[in-house]
Amino acid sequence: MQRSLAIVIPAAPGSPWLNGAVEAVLADGAEAIFVVSEQPPAELIWAGGTTHGSWVPVGEQAGFGERANRGITAADNDGYQRILLLNDDTRLRPGCLSALDACLGEAKERIVGAVLEDWSQTSVQLSGIEVFPASARIRVQRDDPGAEHLPRAAVSAAAMMFDIPTWSRLGGFCEAFSFYFEDIDFCHRLLERGGEVVICGPARVQHRGGGTQSHRASDTAWHATRSQILFAKRLGGGLLNRSRRALCATALGLAWSARNLGPPGLAWSARGAISGLLWSENR
Image 1 (cartoon, helix red, strand yellow):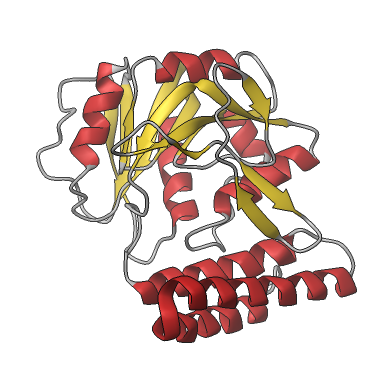
Image 2 (tube, helix red, strand yellow):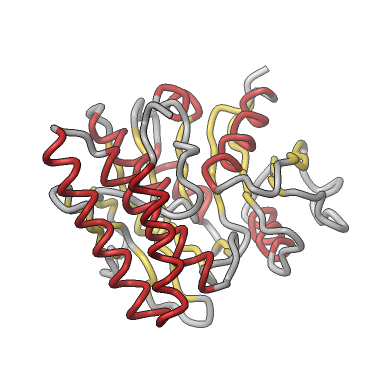
């Protein structure tokens, strides 16, 4: 039996925001919710409130990409064809699901992202991600698209919709990433196939930020630097280009950590850089 849309939420252990995210998607018409986490959420708020849904267990060390793949696989096994990947620290504004669904339409190869708004106000937090392939540098876009559907190089997995066949053809999210850049990598691979990545202006989601992973500076610095280097390597090209991008990504990661997290962050960023530089696609 084929079913339409399932919500997949990779959740942090004991997330204080999960029930709020679930309440919002239920209010917006969601029928199925798959929560992916190490432990089953206490007092599952959707119990009896949806036609389907479940908790999907995952190991403690699983990164965002692995958590997303586990949840999407569970939804696929239960016959769903379309996924909204959603962070646990989000709250959908009314009409978001229908706007994303309409934007995705019948396109065979498309990823659609919602506009992320700051939690306590309506200012735009993210409306897409610009990618500079020569250096693997990225830039968060914050322009307000209004009611338009605009092409983007990438959109955030904090609120991202796609068909399961598209996810399957891409081989899912790359699980080599722990946190950060797995959504950018996913979008880039679709664009390379000739697909589309679109930001859906009418679809709005409030987003706290950082809710699906640790807030410790050491974790942030390690993951961010390592993942940027992995993304640089996965952009392909000849050995010289890949090496140059990897070194550029290393410098970007170290600079970001030093600027935002200080000396403790810089030390952990260096460790993440070593891990990223030693990583190989063939490992």
